[in-house]
Image (cartoon, rainbow, N blue to C red; front, side):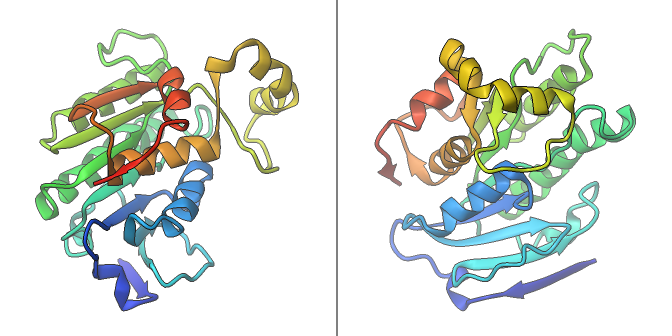
Length: 244
């Protein structure tokens, strides 16, 4: 079941050069930064945020749609019609759910969402939050790597004119939060030293989110299907943006 509340009619009206953007997973860390950045971005006419929980915010450019079952996104067809780009950040942490659930969330959810978006807005660009070590060959022993690789393969083959795969390494939360497990608590504690020693193995969450939005709604002279490793993402946030 979907319940939606449109905050302003301007959500569906784009002036010249502005884009209509969908964000999935805006209640999460990266998705939340993507939402905030998009709402303040003059290149974005309106943002449709799709998720299971209310965001608890209002904005003239925001349309919020609640959707509970991402294994079936057919009911989102009308919502996804006329969109210019999507940023998909929905996911879960390794160990937080069973392996079967982990694969469903990591592979089935983005692929199903992409299926409906492709039917409703065939010219949309798609930015996908993958992860460092994703293995499109399927040979990795790590479920995370295999499943992210499987999702990447499906999205790249979905037929979108532009697909951007983001493979961040450690995502620094920037703002204080309750860390999901011990390894994340440890990384946050040693982050200043780790960043100095291994700068290409970390990325601030807000920088990652900004890059994901920028490539979806702007033209950078890059290809139609691009995989961005952590080093690439760090380089992107220092580049000027050319509005599409």
